[in-house]
Amino acid sequence: MSSSLAARRSPGSLTRSNLSGWGFAAPFLVFFLVFLVWPLLYGVYMSFTGKSLTGANDSLIGFANYAEALADAGMWRSLGNTLYFTVISTVPLVVVALVMAALLNVGLPAQWLWRLSYFAPYLLASTVVSLFFTWMYNPQLGLINDALATIGIPEVAWLNDPNVAMWAIVIATLWWTVGFNFLLYLAAMQNIPHQHYEAASLDGAGAWRQFFSITLPQLAPTTVMIVLLQVLASLKIFDQVYQMTAGGPAGSTRPVVQYIFETGFTGYRLGYSAAISYIFFGLIVLVSVIQFVITRRRSA
Amino acid sequence: MAIQTLDRPASGTRTSPELRQPRKKMTAGKVAAVVAAALIAVLWLVPFAWATATAFKTETDAAAPKVSWLPPSGLTPEAFVKVFQDGNIPLWTWNSLYTSAAITVITLVISALVAYALSRIDFKGKKVLMTVIIASIIVPPPVLIIPLFYQMLALHMIDTPWAIILPQVIHPAMVFVLKKFFDQIPRELEEAAVMDGASRMRIFTQIILPLSRPILAAVAIFVFIGAWNNFLWPFIATNDGALLTLPVGLQTIKSAYGIQYAQNMASALLAALPLILVFLFFQRQIIKGVATTGLAGT
Image (spheres, each protein chain N blue to C red):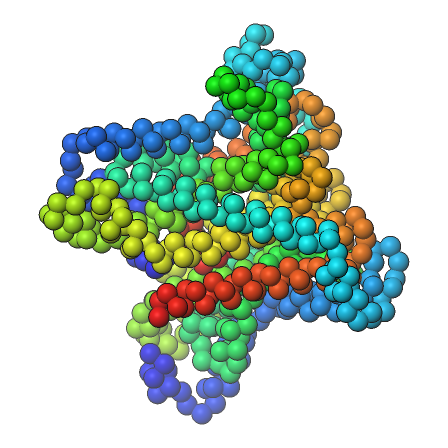
């Protein structure tokens, strides 16, 4: 394709192409530079200063913020919470999505009804989800404890028990966002060539066998992508925690994004907060690189 | 792979296995699948149902220690009436609507333009630009909140709608999705126009864009849902009560209404309603749109 372009190219047309190329890119570039590249770089600078919201201390203080962060138990705890949430949320968010899609792929009637019920929560704002679940988790008046009581399980203090709160958040998150992964799986399943199944049927493989020997292997690339996206999404956890537990009880659910937010806007320490932001960014890059290497090895 | 979904004929999403496979009679396995699917569906609908049941109760019934779906004093819309009289929900809905619409339009325009350049125009520095845009997909928005807030303060944009809108229009992943779609449009379609001396802009607006409607719709849906539901940045960028978007506004009612459960649920349901309604009407497009853009990253 590019050869036909090259053939057409006359002297001077490259300059014109340069002009129109950058011309078409310009509007995006302006926003990109002002609202992404600049803050990203400026944040690095901030992380080396003592900048605060209360007064000006713009002086460079070297790596002091980073040194403080690395010795900050609060930061490590919040990083730990974020990682813990990522691990215990990713598994159900992928597995339940797969189960939902596999059930529908059997060929159930009223497809739209299932899709609507599984996917609808994804259209809600985090605040709506938090209001719903805070109410259902209410220890005395809530629906969940009432249902548990009927099967003889004693009252659970969902959002007020440090041992349970994170799981409560995982359940709410599962309900909220699994529909997204479910749709990705469903689309991928419908792209599996039908002949695979016909051949297997002729060989006498049952539905169960077909799922494990055809569907699952064919879905492997999709699964890798979904896990990757889910891990990256889970690492950014903030909304539902902030809204449901505000990080409590006793800091047991406070994720690192909330720690960044609080250091900057409650503690007014913008420079220090920026430093933690970049430690968090480093973690995201690290995870991405690890996943990239794993996927490369898989496909190689 | 994701793009493939779009190449199917319009009836593509309907081609569920039940139509493609020779129809068998209900086997035991299929019955089990229906039961399991229904069980999950019920679980997934319970939060909506319970919120609705609560919203139609009186505050006294809502806070009754005994859980009941049909309260003793019957159902009443009074919580909804109170919430509406309050006036916040309509205001927040309007704020969410116009900021999300602006974000979607600006994103589409600037992303499609740059994607066209990356797909079709040979210009110096194109490879570098492409690499930088793809690399930026990795930047998590929470990392930017501190410097972005400081920058917005300096630009005097805090507590204006621009603070909500402008930082949300950069979607590098969507640029990539659009570029990949443009790449698949056969170049022959443009040759004739090039011979006639049509400008780049004309080719873009009259040939490329009309052919790209499905992907533009998909990107628009994805961006709109994201903007409509975004919490963290609008939460930081606005303190002015008149500017709050729905998700941010809702966060304030917990403290404002205290333990008024019926009103809380009525507000949450009213906030959920617009997108759920849109989804009921455009279900197929939305599902297709999410499936198409979803794998490109959020």
